[in-house]
Every structure is written in structure tokens, then in C-alpha cells.
Length: 129
Length: 375
Image 1 (cartoon, chains in turn cyan, brown):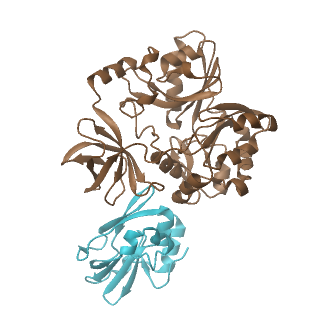
Image 2 (cartoon, rainbow over the protein chains, first blue to last red):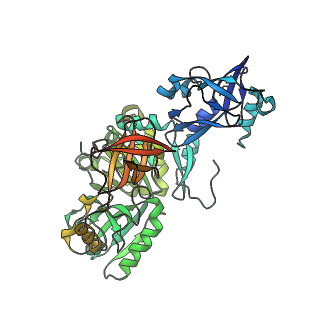
Image 3 (cartoon, chains in turn blue, orange):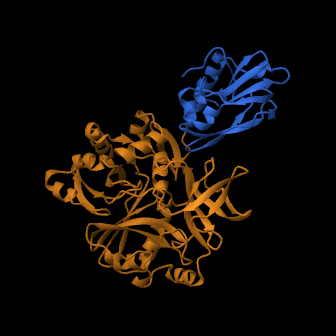
């Protein structure tokens, strides 16, 4: 399972790609593997704003529905139509094609709440989540 | 996932582990939910062949000279229509006409019947049947569940896989089997039954065998992979397959407060055959008119319905989703719903409350996927 080094991760299994004050958010390969076939993704509208930790949508597999949580506070700049129209793209490519929302970062990023690739990998390997 | 306490494992637990199946608790058992993915497995059964461990299902054997008479008085379908080596879909009801369980009854001989019951109901069913039999003469009821395993082989290529288990003298009989037929056979020297039944909407078989030979039988079936395309299938795809075919799931689509008329299986209710437990309540229900009825529906807006979600027409609640899912072969999403009979109409638009958002759906003819069981 792949966890790209340039990204930040949350214990809720979202990833975050930060560049200046814009961030891209998606779900990790581990989350995708745990869910199984992803059949539906529900995402917010452009312009919606969220606090860090807020539920911003849902991801649904054949069997279960899970909430998606914001790794940081921000305003939605763009929503990935590909993820909505072809939810299987999350499965095949969760980090590139399968991104979910692009955000304008609001306020300071709480770095302590985010994991780097190595820390996230050991977190999921721990199996305590 | 760690197994809850007191959970049961089938004789194929080690096989599932080796295959790295995702396991889930179901009806008191740890069962495989998928091996590859639900959608891949669903497709494999529709297009080729799938192998299911359904050893959690219960088996009750009813024997004795009065076995047929006894079952005629305790089940909804007409036992007198069965010949040796045939089966029928049926149900047992409480006095109020509510469903204790749905089941398949096979007539092995005129004085021996095999009943396949739901995993989650096996203790309840056995106790109920046993209690009813206690009042009757010439009937003995045996719970075979702990000694028997069950494998299902389903899909257009299932005959090619199953024929590998059938000895030369039985091949002619095997090939002439019709839908709902059952035959006896030997599997690795032990007595077994092979039925042309299933829960997927495809041509298929269910095999009842002693626990001791379950793993060997599984392996023998898997060895036909090169020509049958057989692969293991979990309960996840079993659920999406049965839902497309509109086969009911006990606990979801029916329970003790739902009658077979309401649950949409009135075709299996034979009121003309004479008295049976629950009959009076069904007659009364029919005369008064059904208050609730089962419908199939498909989503016409995005979103996936799940059991328990509420349905609305013009802002008024008219019932609940009893089973809902993506429909991999049919396309889109949909399911079954138990609705207020006076307020729901075939072809009508309804709204499903999906986590607070009302999404449009349409009530459609059953089944969602036309079963190919007879072909």
C-alpha cells in the first residue's frame, strides 16, 4: 500500500496536499482498501466553508457509508467531478485522479494534528484504528 | 476483524483465512463478506460461476409416515404438490400470520423431508417445528444443522463445476434436473444432497454434505476453475445478487409482524389447500385489504438507499426501505420497500430520505433482474 511522502495524513484516513494557501484533500489507499468497492461519493458545493474536523461529505461502498472529515479549516474552491461521476477512480488512484476537494486554507494549519507518511503508515500498521 | 465471543465458524473457516477473505459476523457466525470485491464477485456469478460457503444455513429433517400431513398443516405452500426429489419455497407463520421464517422444503421420500432454514432463525425454527410436531403422531423432527455443511454453486457455468462431483451412474439424473429438484449422491463416500436451487437469480445448485467432506468438496469444485471460471463469493455479493432478483432476506424484508401477503410472496400461499397455522389471519387480512405491501424501487436521482431509510410521497411518510443497495447488473441503485398500500402505486414517484436529503425514486415491477434459474 502506497502513502506518498509529500502528503500529510489524518487519523481519519484523509490525505492533504498543501501548497501555499491552497490544499487538496482526498482519502488514503488504506481507507479505500478497508471500504472495498466505492460506489458513491457525496461532496460539498464550491464556496462552502468548514472547520478542521468537520464532516464535509460521505464516501459509500457496497456495504457501508463513512463520513469524510476536513483535515484543516477551509473554503471549497473546487470539487472533483471525476470522483463523483466515477467513484471507482478513488480505488484505482486515490492520490491523483481520486482527489475530492480543493480548499482555500483558512487560518493557521495545526501541524500537530497531521501525520507524515511514515507516521501514518505505522498508525495503520498498528491496527488500533 | 476480531471475532465476537461465542461466534460460530463453518468447517471452511481455515480455507477462508487462507484466501484472505474479509470476515464479518452474520447471524451468529463469522462469514466471508468478500474475497476480491463485491462488484467483481457479483459480476462473476452473473457471467460465469461462483462458490459460496453457506454452511451457516440450518437444516431440519422431518421424518415419519405423517411427515407430509404435518408439514401441510404447518407451512404456507401446498406439500401435496411435491413429488420425491422436488422442493418448494414456503414459510412458517405465527397465529397472526406473521413470518417466523421463509424456507425451502424438499421431499426426499414420502416419509422424509429436508427443510433449509435461515441461519439466524435455526434455533427458533427448530424449537417451533419441534413443538408443533410434539402434538402430532407419526412425525419426528431432527436438527441436522450442526452436522451438515452447505455450499452453493451459482452462475451460467455452475453445471460444469458441479458435474465434477457427480459419479458416472448419477450423471444422467444430474443433467435432467429441473429448477427446485433435489437428488441424493455420495460425496467422498458420505451421503449428500444436491438441489437445483439458489439465492442469486442464476442457474445454480446447493449442496448439502457432512461437515467432514466440506473442505474436500470445496477443493474439488475449485479445481474446475479452468473450464467453469468458478471463484469464491462472499455474503456481500450474495446480498446484491439476491436483491436484484427480489428474493427476500429474513430480518430485512420480513419478520414476525409481516405476513407473506404483505411481503410479496402470495404466490407461495395456498389458502385453498386447507387449514394451516396462520391461515385464518391471512384470510382476514385479505378480506380487509392489505394495509402494507412490498414494492421494488429504483433511484432516479443519485444516492444509495439503505434498509431503514424512510420513503415519502408529497411530504407524507409512506413506509421504509427494507433492503437497499447499488444494483451492479441492473445499474444504478434501488431495493425493496414496505409501503402503505393505499398510498403507493406502481410506476409512481417517491422520495427516499438519504441521511436528511430527499432523493427521487420510482416504484417498479418486480423483479429488478429477471432470474435465469430455469434455463
